Image (cartoon, rainbow, N blue to C red):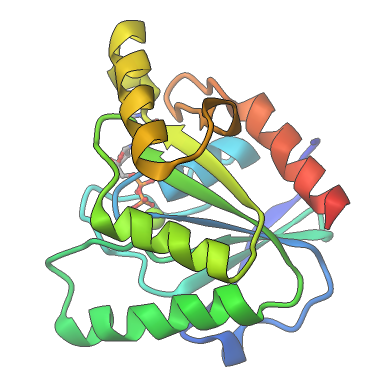
Amino acid sequence: MIISSAQFVSSAPALSSCPASTWPEIAFAGRSNVGKSSLINTLLNRKGLVRTSATPGRTQLLNFFAINEALHFVDLPGYGFARAPRAVRERWQPMIRDYLAGRANLKAVVWLLDSRREPSREDLQFLDWLEEAERPTIPVVTKIDKLSRNELARQLAVITRTTGLDRELFTTFSSVTREGCAELWERIEAAIEEG
Ligand SMILES: Nc1nc2c(ncn2[C@@H]2O[C@H](COP(=O)(O)OP(=O)(O)OP(=O)(O)O)[C@@H](O)[C@H]2O)c(=O)[nH]1
Ligand SMILES: [Mg+2]
């Protein structure tokens, strides 16, 4: 996709305050620090559009971005951050589940897993919610620049076994090398067309 414009729209603390829209919407989800914000910046070829950080749990709202005045990207707050205040963690689950269940124009969720980690209990719980909400899911394995090809193959075996998802469903991705960027765009565009 040619990106002619990409800009921050707003942050919402709940489904009820999400911007009214009929544009197709793609959300990005995964544990804190998995690389969501970096991946969005890479897809959009905009270095600092979405704030990235080395401190997990910084993004605690639903963050909306307008692409080409025709599409929304939503950077969802990451799960699994132990150091966020309890009140923030308790607000997180209903915010995410309401959004997944109720956002009418949500076409697909790009679900990120860290290539170096075994999927956690929270990862698998999130996958359950996606399935419950019947949202098309685009699984992505991130930070593959940190692994050798052999290590990546070994990790993919663990990830496919734990999630029960087939290998060919996963896009392997790096925000450092941009590997996987074109494939991920193809999958996002296909999800928009199907929906
Ligand atoms: N080597 C490598 N580092 C990455 C990659 N993607 C992200 N990172 C780094 O991982 C850290 C977290 O990246 P973010 O994009 O902020 O992660 P996030 O999922 O948005 O994190 P939260 O917003 O806290 O949930 C940063 O230090 C990034 O530079 C990647 O593909 N390769
Ligand atoms: Mg982020």
